[in-house]
Length: 324
Ligand SMILES: Nc1ncnc2c1ncn2[C@@H]1O[C@H](COP(=O)(O)OP(=O)(O)O)[C@@H](O)[C@H]1O
Ligand SMILES: [Mg+2]
Image 1 (tube, rainbow, N blue to C red):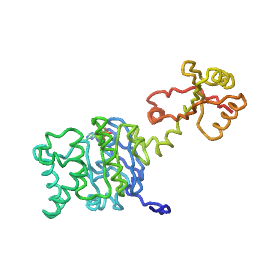
Image 2: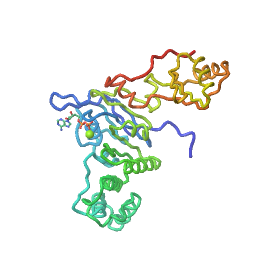
Image 3: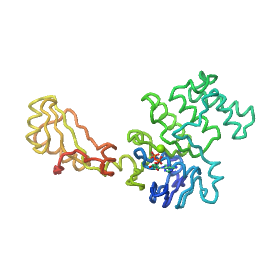
Image 4: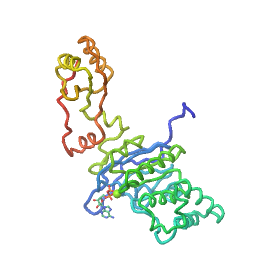
């Protein structure tokens, strides 16, 4: 592993991307940049414009405006080269249910002009990798939702694309299939592939993405790592738990601003979780001569971020009277 890799070049760049359908402005000046070999997540609710963005960046729909580059190629002047560099797995699968999983794979191999022998080899390898070997000879219509998604992604990988667009790859999947899809996506990226992932699930973006962009009202309302987005939202706190009721009472006396949970012998203190705040808190506990049995720092989760950014709902949190 290199530790001193130079700044990676961008696999996907959009600058001022705009798209309207009639009067409806769907994308109203979207800027984004996805470094090679990373997972970028475009996060937004139904109707936010995620699929529209994917369709544009994968050459299926033309933008009204914007400088767009994918795989180093200009979308406006060289869509053919972009197409050769990418794979797309849509919200609505390309899987043909009437033929078997293996036949679907061989069809893709044909489309990519692989020889019969090479096609069979690649198909078998991918079916194996996605745990579909046993089902390979069965019609795809008999597959579960999770199996269909895996087959769809396997088909996308036949052409060995370096950039993959995954449009809501886990929507509608049960938790187990979702986790297995997450594992597959992680493996792709560890192999150097760039993934552009759309999702409505904050948890999914948090779990997978190096960077997350929140799409709201046709624009990127916020962009950053999951941690950076979480820091945008106040509402973090430290929780102290005690096993000894006397210690709990002394701590509660020393930390007047804490919210008490007498039953759990726990105190909740508003805090951004910085080293300075934590040190000051520990100092105050020391002066009071008490020691907590457990200290946990809680940052707001992505749900809080999303609602805070998009004005969906007030984020419930205690008035922050900084403990200094
Ligand atoms: N071909 C189209 N013609 C007209 N309106 C469209 C078309 N495609 C998408 N839209 C509208 O654009 C908006 C964004 O849609 P979409 O990109 O599918 O959102 P998402 O994928 O985030 O759910 C929606 O209001 C949708 O109705
Ligand atoms: Mg969509």
